[in-house]
Length: 209
Image (tube, rainbow, N blue to C red; front, top):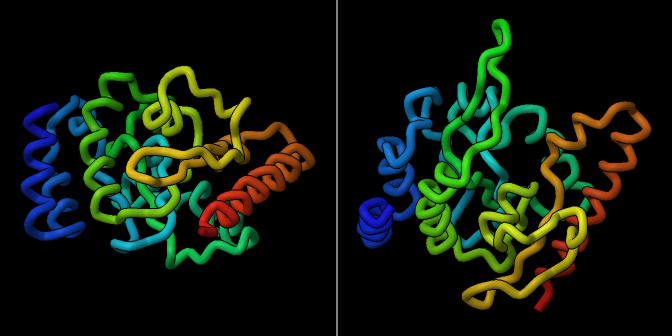
């Protein structure tokens, strides 16, 4: 992990996000590079006000090499629009940059990353934070929230709350959009979606000075 951190710091001093993305493409800090199609790095601009961070890329993201381009990403974009957050002012990324999956017939099914895999990837997210310098970080789901706020953090108990964080930033946790898509019926999906949009509206209010 220390070697990765030192490599990231070197990239920070030279070429910004594009150089960081190029460096991450060759990451071998954990075994997930063997099964993922490619490293899926963050997307957005330096100076974005909000950095959204999820768990890991999904099947579609793994194939396309971009974060949040699958069903979860489409739901997220709609919810951001409803909450009044400009997509151009948002940087999106994941704690883990490779897709972890297990086969089920011909399908590749999401598998939760281990603590070791999360820790191996965190230096990349730290470097993204240093370059983007967002005013607010929004954690999407428990894996992202616990990676940044500690393993005792519970999204179910503390979602939608603006909390002070390191380097003068603020942080908020909510659910991952994929959890809404897994709701058992249309009524429950709508209820969860409305709660998600409310959390994002709270995030927008958290951008105020």
